Length: 208
Image 1 (cartoon, helix red, strand yellow):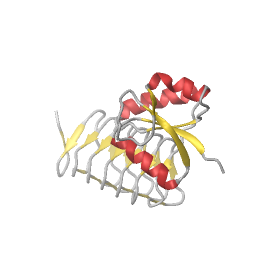
Image 2: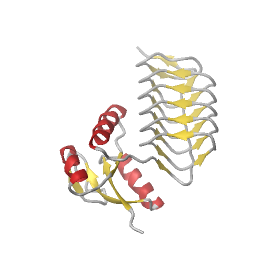
Image 3: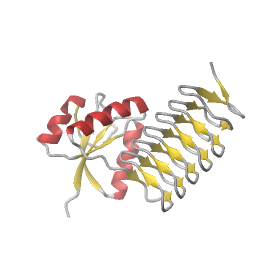
Image 4: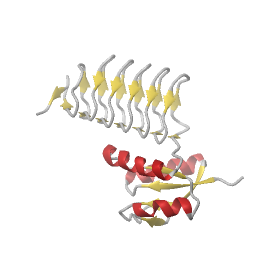
């Protein structure tokens, strides 16, 4: 059975991790890398920069793309480009993650090994859920969110679009993390945040 071909957008560590997961899952054949930067460490051909996407879709007939760029804002812009062209964007869910029934994971999102997504939780589109993350029941993660290794989110938490949760942070039950919030590594968030805020410490406090 022929595998569907997919391209990877991005050239950094996130792209290398996404490639490894796709190889391990054997779900697609990777046709190559599209990125404005060349990284010779990536084990697939560099097809060109972002302006080649139209020809990859129409001439090379590659119909799937995965946006493996860590910066949420850039990831959002690239996602709009690939969708406008017509690419289908899968989610990548590592088989060693634990996904409860009645949960939801949006397109373009990636879930790393040993992450847990509990019942009723919803992960939006183009999110990055890293290793050993725990997302509690009925928690909502909006689009383009990064949750880094070892973060723990209790039940009924709400995380706004393009937020960044640092390594090992903890978010208590029913807390609202507003859009574009940066939560520092190891922080304990015990009250709601504001849009575009940065919070650090135990308990978390806002930075100017």
